Image (cartoon, rainbow over all chains, first blue to last red; front, side, top):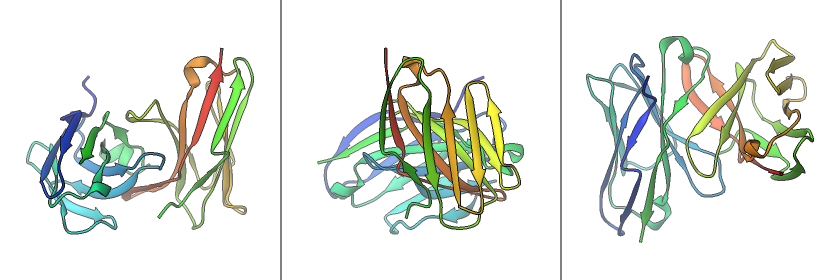
Length: 115
Length: 111
């Protein structure tokens, strides 16, 4: 079975631009979460969606937004990019079963570089 | 903000040796998990220990949890070069799927 897939794997943007990152969860998983990982740090929670509704939001500015589609895939959008947005963006999915235990299944991430 | 803090930040050992990493956290938890990350790639779930458990084993992994001290340890026995990775503890979960990660321990296993 396919795991969590993310695209693109790498991208370079300039300050002020906008970026859209995409994620497809494991088949049957209805929950998708987004995490930002800056070099040398642990992942930081950005958003969690379940059944197309936002269930949680981390301490990130309104420039960050996300949505989940009827097929449970998800997009993360970041507007007005800053140098500090350079990071590895990780998507994770969970099933109703694993969700209640907290186990997340991560994709390989999208590495964003802002110049 | 980081909930968990791993210790040490970096650990270098020889193949065959055991590696122990520690994690401290600040608030009460439902469970604590350990994840592994190879060289800036995705995280892989290793093991979960619930707040009412004190010790758990999975293959060469042994995790302990001391809720009175708000700390956990991950022991990897008979380490291999392929165990070289960053290891993170994470707290949270339950009906709230948000996990809060520490900064991680970078483990290097030398052949």
